[in-house]
Length: 112
Image (cartoon, rainbow, N blue to C red):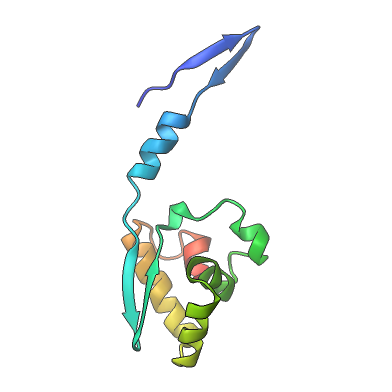
């Protein structure tokens, strides 16, 4: 990975576009799941928008993370299927593992 930089009157500007794009391209594919008859797809954890925490109040808000990732209609389908907080933990643990994170390593994934 190389970066190019431009010098402008004593200040250096490091262009990170190429590195950021390479990392985005290297993200795992979205993961398709089924649990208790409900099919859903979780995006790569590191693809979540930067302002997610601001929108949901806290990344510990698992319900909010699920709504942001899947939409209200799909989350309601999960609620109607009887999902529990323990089920959300199962989803979060697998999602972390498939994204190369140790359990508890990413607050975003732990909250989902």
